[in-house]
Image (cartoon, rainbow, N blue to C red; front, top):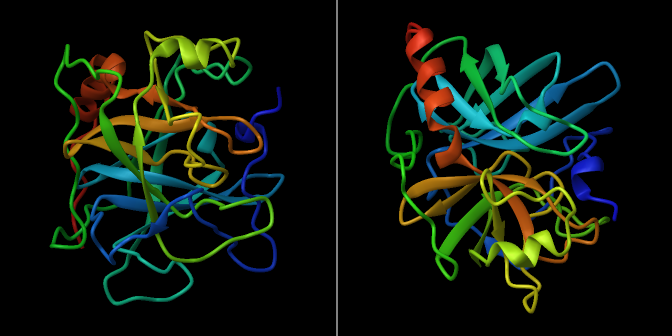
Length: 250
């Protein structure tokens, strides 16, 4: 099965972005932790989502790595220079040491920003889960992003969709390398609602806590999709955040 993880959102003459499948336009700045990542790699220019977890750190998927990454916070329309936007270069991209691009496991990365953001009502971090916190099937969560609505439709404004956590079996039946220990199965197969290409790295937020990271799914955008389970990586995340002291603000 071909996965949209393997089909990154490539940016051509303009910064292409699209929307989540089956979602709607988000109320501007209602997700103050959302980050838009513009990624330069030797082969292409592409984009991902991400989310602010500390005043100088953004969390995203490891497969969103590039030789240089620019982060935009406080954005609604990523094609405009909105007054609320804060654009910051990434100082250090730290992929999980056990990230495996072949089997798409441990798909988590922390981005240290060159400076601390100016925290305000449109730019602020999201909470991370507590150790041992379980996410039960049926939980209603929200995903936001600037990813595609289909292979040939896009928009520039932030989209949102509500998705339910599924039993792990629904993903293990479809994806040969799904593992419930470090991944979450999200999205009802009976509903045409899902994250899609370009949404990678964005957060799955349940009860105001970021529980997952958009990782991969079916190339046609048919749910469920697979999210990295943040709770499984808390020791690594805390180690990295302790190691690197907050950068100076402007």
